[in-house]
Length: 179
Length: 179
Image 1 (cartoon, rainbow over the protein chains, first blue to last red):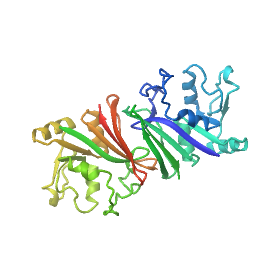
Image 2: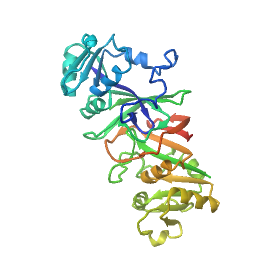
Image 3: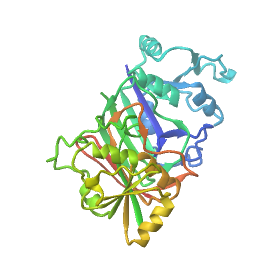
Image 4: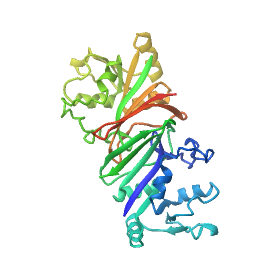
């Protein structure tokens, strides 16, 4: 069982503005769907078999229109009541679990590679030592404030640098393994 | 007149622990003074003719023992009373100036390239649009909390990616120009 983070961050470490907006992230609005460059996203996504996110990420994705994850099991972690639209009930599961409990359950169900998304959710998995791979794509902009990618930890988390690639867009992608 | 930032940050964006400690930053204690790899520091430092830092950075450097900047003018920005040790009075100037006023003054004095150091000081210069170059060396560790490199801004600050280099140590150094 392996858990990975694949996410874009501003150069000052935010994954969204305070209100969830991604207007600072070129391409986030799908305005360039034919772009050849996907920063390894499809390959990464295809290597995972379950996507775990928080309620805020889920609600943000709903605003994009069509549900983009019809080929993957999606778990929304939230302590609030389920608000899955009827049309998505087959694709999305709403759970109020701790990260360790969820990982145990997904492992028992035979899942192999968890894609963890969203600020609070990623922070919860990191805090519990449940992330093995972090792929960060740094966007060349400072936005000053927003939803931070990282948060408090129980202790230092050492990373092993695997590779870094920069793109003509100015994006810099770094792959880390968590030690 | 050009202003540059050259600084090491944890992968979660801190330049020091909350108490100023750099124990998470390999080499910061000078334990390996013969290291061949200096991550371009000497070349960068030699290209600057004045170093501006805040009081906390100054007090931290004092704890290292010998003053490392005897060949460079150093300005400590602080609204508190001067606490420069007698032996350093020739090397260090204590000023209670705003970043724009200081840049104007240094420019009039003929300085060409300002090296800005320390969290609050860097944030003040960025907020005032007074930084042209940022060289970030990302250390492969998450420390969870500490003194952040970046802070609030008056608006988005667009960066131009110049180059990124990774090192066998796992450090990843990115050069940006501020647009």
